Image 1 (cartoon, helix red, strand yellow):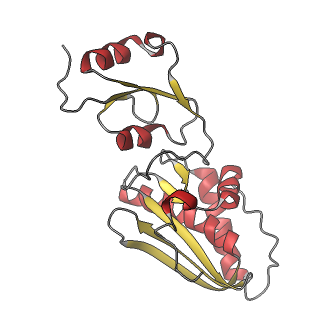
Image 2: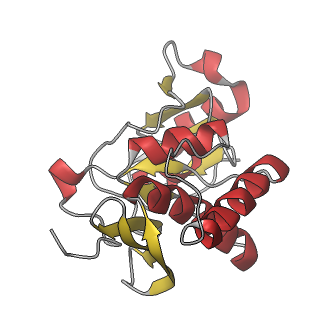
Length: 209
């Protein structure tokens, strides 16, 4: 028996974080963005969606796919998400990063260091964000505007060449902890690239440009 839905858009997710039928694009996108080999498709009736979910992707000739790249952006950002960003007074210089919930604008965490780089801050912000979502037991996407930090997270290794000295030692201790966390943990949250050109500055931005 088909389930009842009030809207005329039914998104079937065959391969994603949680396969099923979703009634909004935001809900569907949260399941497939950043998920390797995700497949999904939009249908116009609950009957079609139920049949497609039951019969698999072969029900549709060309199921849509989202590549695991984090540079994909479509429409508007997912509002129930965590945004992270870093700021540096000089590069290197005094560095801080933070995480801000997009929907509410609430600051969930913030850290500051006497010397660092923007890329290190962006890297630590992503890892801190993932750990914070794990602590809160929340599965929502994490947005960043740094492709460099995303590539470091993917490699599970910070690629900074900033010298380690007495001033930067506490920072690099945290970097090593972040790398260890990435190597010893798994996560379901999507890591997405914030589209600054379309959406404006990321909500976690410090507003110092």
